[in-house]
Image 1: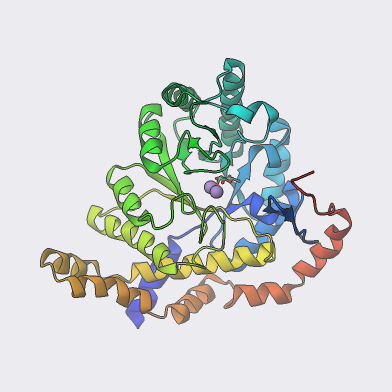
Image 2: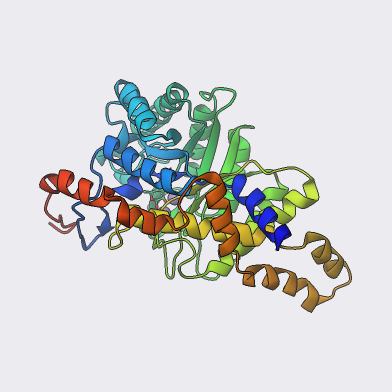
Length: 395
Ligand code: RM4
Ligand code: MN
Ligand code: MN
């Protein structure tokens, strides 16, 4: 047990998970939004909420920012964001350019047939790289909505080359310590072809872009039943896994709470990372980021819940006996090998996590502490007058 507590503590000490600024805002589906009076509408509010999550969990020192939503005036917003982050006790994390909302992107950004639109999209990413430098953030995280809805309407090969050119141009604007993360997604908003649809496409493009480009795996961006941990193992072996966007899903890109549908899959992903690190004898440099929007759960509470689930599953994965597992794999002892994972997954890590929390000076039960803190009541009062009525996508 003493051993278990120490292993869990060492695992949690090295596990930090980045919060998404957009996860504290109102969200919904294309059928409508159910607004929460307490949801954040400004970057100051998003950072303040993120600061609460970090204060209660001790695991979230950074916040991913969406350029257009959080820094609409670009460089002119840097000081404000830096100050608000410091006041909230967090730091700016990955910068996410927005290449999907503006009218000119109807037919794509980097893949747009119009060179003016392409140049504008690349310039926006270069600006975002500079914002990252000014804010002291490391990762420029790119997700593209580019694709097409009908067969024959886009030159898939030409667009592949445009993406290679555009990503190389953005890569050239990075500082030596910045990274470029390339995210993939099989469909939505494009429903026939998506330019960066899977990890293989992201891998090829990242390789071509330059040495500081890596792949970002959003756990919700795969077809149902895809073996995500195998992708993780391959990207680790290729030294090309840059980071994660964590969420869970049942059908498509549902952005549900991590581990709510399939906690064993999250465990298996963490296991592949731990197993790799054990064999390599060094830590993998991976950015763990949450990418969730909660339209029905309370935004802050859902984020605290997510962090706690991620910590528990990461801690369980750290309990796998890798030596025993390796022996069993070599001897093709299938049941013993499999049980190495199952035993770790079945271990109750909650008491060890409470001990870790006490040692780190955070509450035993962060959700309960949040509920009794009065923070939600206060921001509900302060923010309630400003929430716009539920908008519809179909008007
Ligand atoms: C996309 C993708 C991106 C995220 C946007 C809001 O589906 O997951 O990473 O920034 O949603
Ligand atoms: Mn994502
Ligand atoms: Mn997504």
